[in-house]
Length: 294
View 1 (cartoon, rainbow, N blue to C red):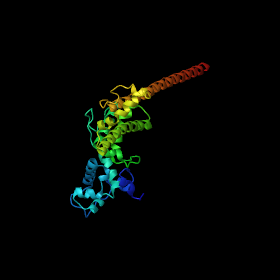
View 2 (view 1 turned 180 degrees about the horizontal axis):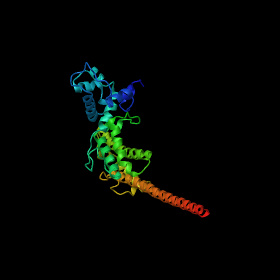
View 3 (view 1 turned 90 degrees about the horizontal axis):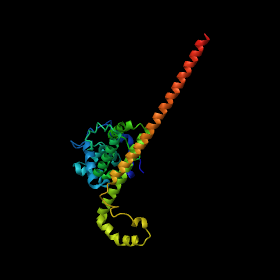
View 4 (view 1 turned 120 degrees about the vertical axis):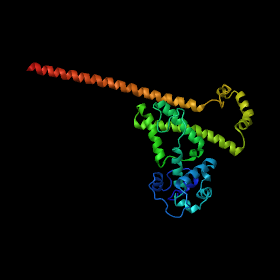
C-alpha cells in the first residue's frame, strides 16, 4: 500500500488509510485554507457534499476527484488544494453523514437524547438504520480505525450521556453501543445485499424463490428435513419485523443486566451498612470499657 493509502482509497473501503494528520486538520478546521488557484466559490464543504451525493446515487466506486471536478465544474487539480485525495475525503464523508440530524420516534432534538436509556437504545438503533438506508455505501466502509471528527465524537457523547443511567461500567457502556450498532448493521447489510442481488441478476425475490420451489417441495416431502417441513407457512413472511423483534430482545437483555447490577449494588450497600453498624458498636463498647476503668 502506498504511504498515502491509495490502495484502500481506490477500493473505497477503509477510513484512516490516508494522511491521518491532514484528515484531522480538515475535520477539526485547523488546516490552512487555499489562498490561490481554486475557482471562486469552491469550498471543502461543497466538495464533501458533492462526494456524498455521488456515493448515495452510485456507490463509493463512482467517487473520484475527476468525477467531483465534473460535478463541481472545476479542474481536478483545484480539488487537491482542498483535500489530498480520496482516502482523506472518505474520512470527511463519514463524519459528515454521522452528523446529520435524523428524525426520532420521540421527536426530541438531537441535542437532547431521551432521558430513559431504553428509549435511547431504540433511538440509537432506528437512527443508525435510517442512516444506513439513506447512505448504503456506509456498509462498504471499514470503520475499524475511524478518524474521529466532531460529528463522530458528538454522537458518542450523546449516546454515552443517554446510557449513563444504566449504571454499567464504562467499557460495558461502549459494548452496549457496539452491540446495538452491530445488530443494526447486520440487518441493514442483509437488506442491501438482497437489493443488490435484484439489480445484478434482474430477478425479483419472488422469481428467485419460485425457481427453487419444485426442488424445495420435493425435499420437504422426502422426510429428510422434518423440522423444516413442519414450519408454518408464514415462517419466512416479509411481514415479520425482524428489526423490532431483535431490538426488543436486545433491550430485554440489557434490562436483565441492569437489574442484576442494581441488586448487587443494593446487597453491597446492605453489607456495607451492617459492617459500619458493627464497627460503630465495637467503638462504643471500647469507649464504655475505657470509661469504666477510670
